[in-house]
Length: 395
Image 1 (cartoon, rainbow, N blue to C red):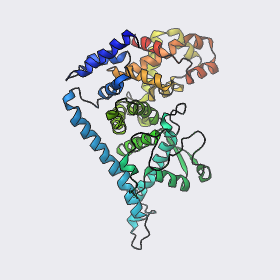
Image 2 (tube, rainbow, N blue to C red; image 1 turned 90 degrees about the vertical axis):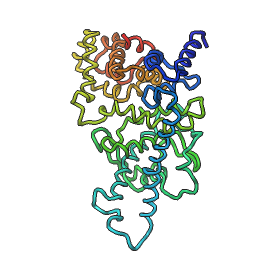
Image 3 (cartoon, rainbow, N blue to C red; image 1 turned 45 degrees about the vertical axis):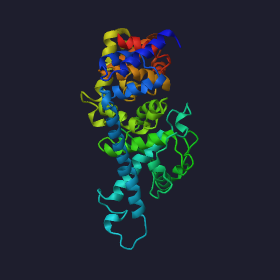
């Protein structure tokens, strides 16, 4: 470890040791990257994502309150519905129309249960493929949720629910446009294709199952948006950062802390996932066009080349912007970019700057390429070193 890096860690420690943290000083430090050592990054993200207050004397009470709230969510949205389902599933002679699975009332408990299953199946499908190039999400968590895994429980857990629903129902894919693909029940019988993670034995759960639970609770609490494909790519790096925290007292609560940080981040980013807002000023279309507007100012030649080839910004910037570049780089590089992104007060304006910088970095390739070659570059970004993006994006 270099002397400069040790000094940098010390600067963070000094800033984070203040009773009232100076947000501007912390932002300036984080902009150039946050050290992992000592759990510094995880703490900084929690502050930058408005989960931890700047007044450190409030941390203990604030964390306890938030984590207790999350436990209540688990009880109300997973455990209690599981108990209700078990009760409803019992053979009884006095079943009312309200309790009947074929009740046509859209507000019936069964109808809600079936709709939730559609969302749960899509979440399950996506999280099983989260960062397949690294083993972390397949491994068991050191801190499985005891509320869920208690062997005395006889209610229907999410794991059981998925297994039963996959065997009985069709697999539904949902993206921003709604239901797009319904596969035959026969295909659904192959529970775990070779590119998807398998379920661990009873009593333990993999990290991807924790992410699944976070996304399901988010979907239940935010019915207006529920779950849209790609949210798993946003929650993944946050959970990874918190679940690998070297401080076990923080790591133990990675699930609850991730949920609230993800919720806060989505409160700023959720409009990108709502199709009806696409063409509004807060929607994704405006942001995609902003990348080209900025490119036109910074590199007119490249802008005209892309226009001449009829390469629209939505062909590639849609994924870049909605997923905060999480699919364009390896996870460690995504985390490094997010250090800067989270630290910037106008973080999504900075994201547009970074996207523009990504185009300028490969300008020679794009100026020399035809439509097909250039689309390949833009949809599979060829540069893995993210350090030039930080300097270009900051200009």
